[in-house]
Image (cartoon, rainbow over the protein chains, first blue to last red):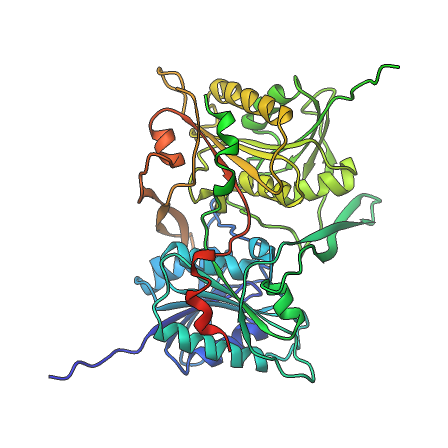
Length: 258
Length: 258
């Protein structure tokens, strides 16, 4: 008796919303590898970090953007999409969760603000191999072709090799230019921050309002960081875990014991 | 010539909203130590994680809940409050950021979902000593008196001792009972997760909607974890950092290099 091997199952989400070009380009890649289920926010959810919807209800609506595939738009955040996918739609854990491809870079500490990456971190909490993909191009008409090639390579390796427990990957791809991406570099998260600024404007009633803006500053440009890889034309891959304990400072804080 | 030492400045925020009992109890403690500025969300923002407002505008409204103190309600998330506080209201970095006291526990991996803790993590990214306080009691009429005592002790030590760079503290206090809290334990983040469940209900038009619910499961109950401390009657203090790189797996993932 021959045992028929069933096709793997890939769950796809993002934070730019279900109608974005980035998720369509990721679905295109993933469906050549596996059965695919898509649940993504019904509106842009950039910068939502690890937000979940606890004070309100969630809606799921079937979506026909992806002919022949199971797809839903969701009123919640990227992390809500992952939770609903596992517990209400698939009723099982997929073989892989992929999130993106994000319109914009999520390197360095942006992993904390990024809905794209928080969906992958939620996958890691569920102990499902999970990968967030981002392209360093914010334009709606960004060219995702190189990012698709990188995603294809990485998904292929991820499906063939076991992931360590409770880890996900943060993948960033440089903006497409005349020089092709040089390769893939496994790196650590760079120590870099936003220098925030607010634009203060006034509405038609003379009341002030604020837009968050700012500049991303690279404080530490060591050759083993994701920002360095990106600035030098490589796609970066950072393995991410969610134990935020500052182990190196446990001893120092013992003075708080009583 | 005697040099007059100016009073320290403490910035206070939370995620339950500016009208919650928890923030009022924290303000009461903090104002005995320092000059105080309060900016907190104008509505509950529980579970908002490290969300920031990038697709919409932010409003700040002066608030007279705290007579004699500078206070604003904000239309955004806890992290927005921290950013607005530093860059638009105080125009300088405070000596300490405190967040809470949260109505409900934020131990273990809840640090990722918690708006209370994300405000503290944002403070750490700005390299400001920052502390999130949470009480393991979800009731609106929770008794914050013991949590206030713990907060007072911890704020006092924090103002007298330099914080290591880019670190914040996650402080949780057990629900008040007949047995007084036994003391304070510096711990690591427990390896525990939500076992999610959705309640599916139907609206008046017969359309389904979902409420996120579930149970928190402690997978690893080692004596050095925050959950263990809380379950044994101690307040827990976990030093938190934001480099999420899984250093122990960098070598394993080198197979992705190309």
